[in-house]
Image (tube, rainbow, N blue to C red):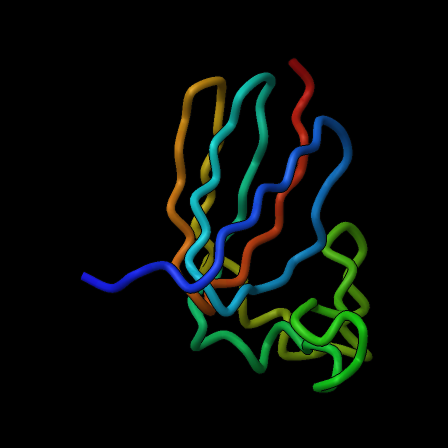
Length: 109
């Protein structure tokens, strides 16, 4: 196996995380409540319209998932049916490989 290059801990209880990808493995542990995670394979990079390299949000999609602007981001429509949805509850663990896009939102308990 390979040795981890980085270890970070993110904690949050409300809201959402806009669709983005990370260059390293992620292990997502849901401690309390429920979250919906929508995952997209790295091959869908062009359909998610990331910000330009060196922009402060350069690994994040410019598309508003709640109200996508298909005139500005027409290829986003190609993602319909392509995502993998995971509903995580207390104690659930999800591995997100490097380069996989993920959009996370808190669900009502």
